[in-house]
Amino acid sequence: MKTAKIGFFVVCLFLVLGGSIFANLNQYYGIWRNVDPNGGITRIDIAKQGNKLVVHVWGKCHPKDCDWGKQIAYPYSASVGSSMTGNTQAVTAVYNTDFSQTILVIRLRGKRLTVEVFTRFTDGSGRNNYTKTHSFTKRRK
Image (tube, rainbow, N blue to C red; front, side):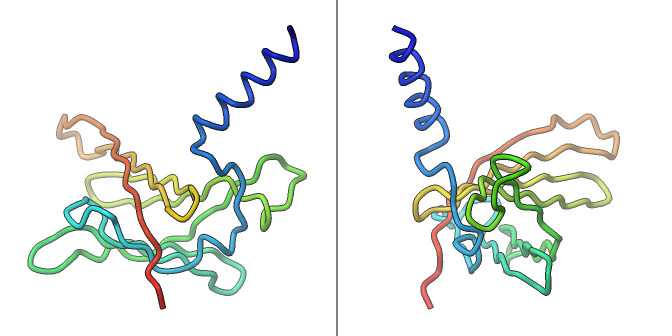
């Protein structure tokens, strides 16, 4: 009975995490486009620059997309002792503006990148903090 419960828990965890639990950090690198062209974030470039991981984001604006700029990003592995390169579970980046702070939690799910966006307003405007999730596909060379 105990084995069945553990097995059920593992299957549920697998489904909640969206399939692929670990990815090679190199799989994150590249130019990613939002599957919804009207989504808030339209493009994300992820690259290694020297010994740092850098995320460059563009948001939906008119007449052309807004450049959010580049930020240092941080990969996360399953544990303090696991390989970061081969066992990346997520990458985070933080964008600060005069009026808000936006945290990106980036995960690779199969061939798609899932980006959870958490925006907190810091200007005292009283606007609600909010979250949104986007799905991206890698641009082919």
